[in-house]
Image (cartoon, rainbow, N blue to C red; front, top):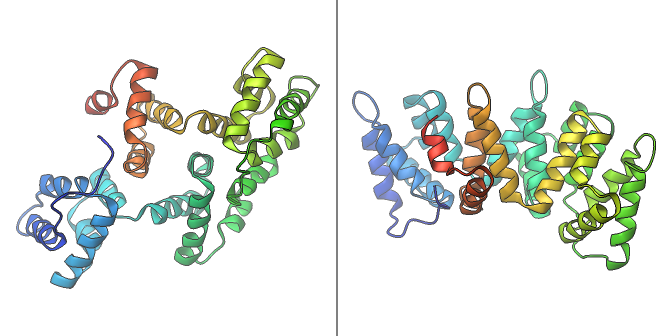
Length: 296
């Protein structure tokens, strides 16, 4: 469960042969499939996919799907998907059909960088033929929609505006705890646009003014999806690995494991910050992520 790095003595053709052999005959050798694909980084998996097609004249993902089933199939197909396409696909699944999976929208848009969001938007249009912003607007409403649309622009400021740290903190206080009712617009503008470093400084200043953390104010002033999105932004500004450690913990604490969330986070962060997530998990919950998953 360390960060997945490129396999040193990598040979795409050899790996394609191993997978082909694992899927021949009665039953599939799932251990080999798992061993090969989890020990290769995503770029290498794409090379294996190309080598497989060249050698055997068929698509590797389709072959795997026909041989595997259930959660294991979901995991393997996820591992075979390029990261940006994976995020775009998760968003598309969250938006299509009856109801919206807001947890997925919030998780991806609150945690990805501006550049990543711009790439996701491009791939979404190419793969699914629609505009991500239009699809999100069609499925959401109110202040929640406004904040999602701001995040979708991927144009968060980059610098710390020293002159406005105190002002932003006071504005947030005045918009929430300092008045009857909540000025959601002010929260949306500041949380959606300021740079992460600037926001960290604003949150410190806010605590001095109000005596409580910004999270407490958000919980007291907002509800539902807007509250969840704002809290996710604040948590990611403070620590993206900390945010994912908490999400993983929650996915395993419910009656029955939330396998979709568990798979999505493990796959999407496997080459990004999994070591940091593990360290945060241990620090926050006093147990290792590895052990917690093992006993599920």
